[in-house]
Length: 394
Ligand SMILES: Cc1ncc(COP(=O)(O)O)c(C=O)c1O
Image 1: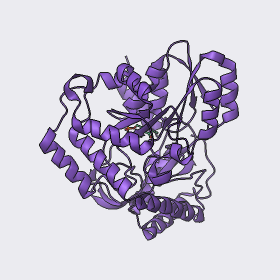
Image 2: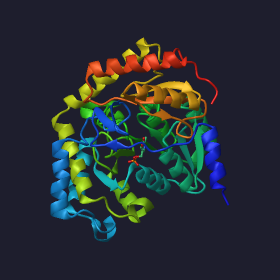
Image 3: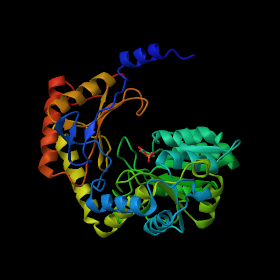
Image 4: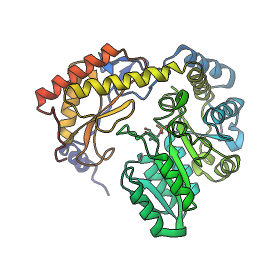
């Protein structure tokens, strides 16, 4: 039996123990955190839609019209008109025949990967893919070949080695902890050459990259060609839940085989209606995406000017790698004392030795707020002796 107290002590000693902070009020550029007002630089509400009046009203109206919960799984009695309306709109937005809603991005990834791969087959997964992709690979019982981050040569070598057992290549489109973009055209070419499918996780790319915020797949001109696109509703779209887009046959296959779809209650109607309102706002106001892009560039530039390394980020996700977990958390606390909330990220979310502050920018931040935040974090880093950072041992 696991000794819980001992395990917790180990986590504390290695700087990996986590605790919850409390946010009062809705998401926004500034929030009240544990009782004090701070600039929020670690929310995934990239476009500021979670607190938007139209999104809130849509949720409230749906609660009144449809109830607070769906009452059953989609395949029993939980499939309602809001689910269908959102799926149709998402499919059109992404340029696919069909979309299928899931309870969350985690559930979409584990359910889809486990449905598309099985014992005796091989899934190819980027080493920096999100934990839900890793868990989907494990659940599938297929063998997993983890290729070096973004390394298409390594992937090609692995595909050649396994021959006909290759079944699926899966990658984050925009990497959640590093903010860089996968080499999607090359991944698709390899998938086609090796008779495999390509699945791309757009959790952080929807609403942030590509034409009108259609994601990294659309940015690469591959809408409708990548076999499965997974997107989330809980980040830029301001609600909760997730979806996959695929051709009609594949979507029907997932509806019939993805266990996290079949054996889980349908998303609540207010959540679905809020996501639809968020999507409509994104379509009507693409300038939000432009503001996000501009803000991301401002933050990258001002952090770099402070001597803080921003890695290969090409997006609103900007990592400042510290290396050592305790030092990363100390920098997080020092920044917080100065009124800037940017969460420290440690293993197992990131590889050992690469603990970091992971900044995420929102379209609703002002440029001067971002400049000031970079200045404050730069000062905190210098005080701690972690400016001009070179990764330290974990
Ligand atoms: C790349 C990626 N995929 C999937 C997920 C899971 O999505 P959800 O939060 O909707 O479960 C996340 C969430 O952080 C993510 O970053």
